[in-house]
Image 1 (cartoon, rainbow, N blue to C red):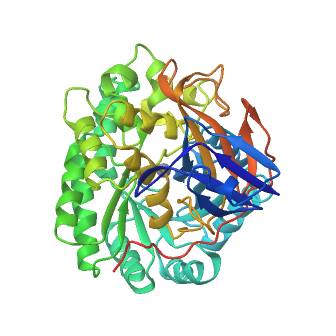
Image 2: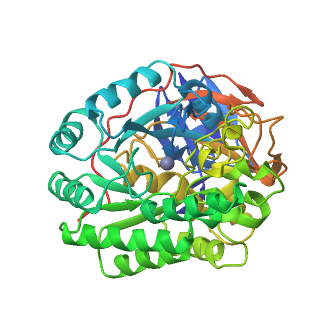
Length: 470
Ligand SMILES: [Zn+2]
């Protein structure tokens, strides 16, 4: 089965060029200057006219939490519903977080994640491993996962004591292990011990509304934890260190300084931190703000965070935009925290909207077309050992392709989205641009405003080491 995509502009890290793309089976077979395929007598079973549209490598979302157990409930997207929603939004690869909680065996957590995902994903997927209990056994398991399971990145938490939390000694030991085996340490950098004190004090004062979730997690405590982690990584031997869901100016300044000093320090941010604020969303009247309870929290509107994050994306101090997709319904899930903000499940659902939301940075002149593709596809693929199979439109690469229409528009909302949520954190957002057609390994999964894929099409990706290290 051959597919020829004609008339479009291929966008990659090197620029935007009018190019025709020939897909043969599951991979990209050749690129042609406009008209050259016809002149060479190339024929195809299926021709897709992409005139006036961008042809970009499928999105790679390296931070999702399908069916994550949290606060007595589970994130509401399964691997089936979540990957179908991702495909609708032009994301063709996710990397989800398998979980070892404190007291559990790493390999058991991984097996549980494979059992949830196997045969259910509509797009390709890989796993990181959350290490919630660093001890001798877990450290041994890290070597095993790198060598045998295609898992080359491990997430640690400086927050959530008793569930995922690692103390500084545990973090140092895991970093030393990663220095040794080449894995990437992914860090949730918030000072959870201090935050828990502030949260308890707020509750004691009767401050129970969702907005206090943000007020008790000040940006200074993200900056402090980011600095501490960067120092620990330096002491552990320049450990590859990747900060997840960066939200704060103070944290970004730490990353900028570490990178200027030549260290293996990287960071991602998420659309919610680029657009949403503590006052406008988390501070919505009554309990409404629960929809936007996530950690780190949305930051105050009048502080520098959002402008700094956009700047960080331009300068590459922020290398990646992921979603931290962790959806919970309002009814029966977010509502668990009525009267006590600490009991609101933490998470926002965005897996379907990342390509659109970051593309708005191109529309408003904050990002170039190339940076859009780099931060959403090419760099995440390289960062997590999937390149050039993923993240680029080039001969030999998987035919994961998004045809994006810059002249069409998208209105985001619960009535039209495909995530398994009873509300949208992005209700009413107007997007200048639209995902038109999506191919996953050569198969058209989205076209003509319909899903044509199937659960089980998605394959598990065994990843190599990060491709950004010395
Ligand atoms: Zn997360």
